Length: 121
Image (cartoon, rainbow, N blue to C red):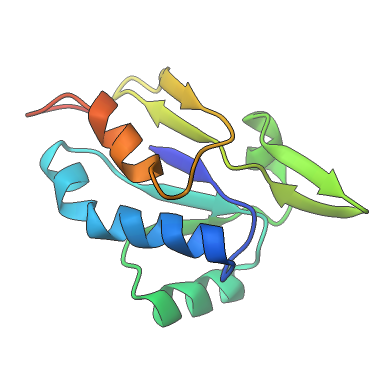
């Protein structure tokens, strides 16, 4: 599962990350991996993970290539950021489900609802 979020250490992004962390064992039980992506730097991600106790991986897309490839790059007054979009990717690398303009408070449970139980993604 690949989720894009606008910025480290902002309220909505923190809520979403906390919920994914809360549900991490459920994702792991379904053989799913959580990867968060923003255009923030690796240093910013490290600070965010340390401050918020996050143990899943955050990817720093500073050149915007991944964010662009997934149609999740936006610009506000000359500042690039990732849109809040989530992609469920199956074991063969195909996109199985897409959520756009996600609600940070329900994103984790929304994705879990789409994951098969047992051996899954």
